[in-house]
Image (cartoon, rainbow, N blue to C red; front, side, top):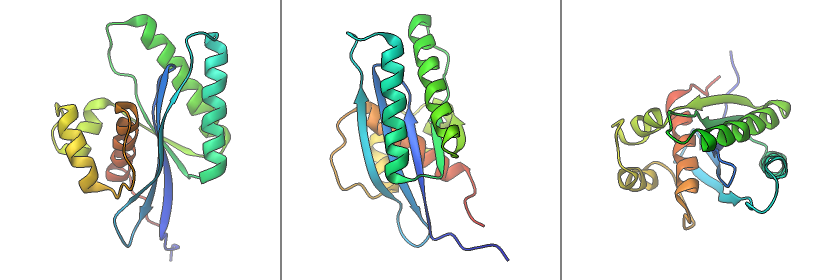
Length: 167
């Protein structure tokens, strides 16, 4: 017989190199899921790109050590017209996935349409639809200050909806 899991933590990230949406969600099997932590982590355009990646990696590792999540849920890159930005975001994603893997987290990746379907039931949902659904799905005790933070929460909720975390 497998062990019973009463809770687990998911680190969910909306990747970027200027702004990184970060959330830690506690999955409880006895009550509504809880937003433990969220922020929009920012780096300055005044520092070099490698230094920005280092700051992002350090921040993610600090959060992993503090909250001890078992899983990373991260947004997959989706087609974009700005290749320069896409390359930078891709490199930031790589740094984040590396840090998570190095710290023993399972990594799950989701496209924006997958996130919209999981949270709203509609793959072309607007940002407003996402914003209205999220508080219905998770207990949030603070104000959400940015779209990046909101997106990170939605990515975490997608992971909870798509993956089986019982043993």
